[in-house]
Length: 42
Image (cartoon, rainbow, N blue to C red):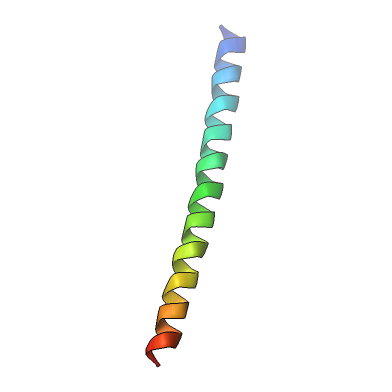
């Protein structure tokens, strides 16, 4: 039982880490697009 909980915890941590990195990449793309749009509108 303890081992299962440990594996579940590691899986959860990995999922959160992966989601975080994906969100960061996506956020960087959005920021770049916003900055380029802003520069084009000047």
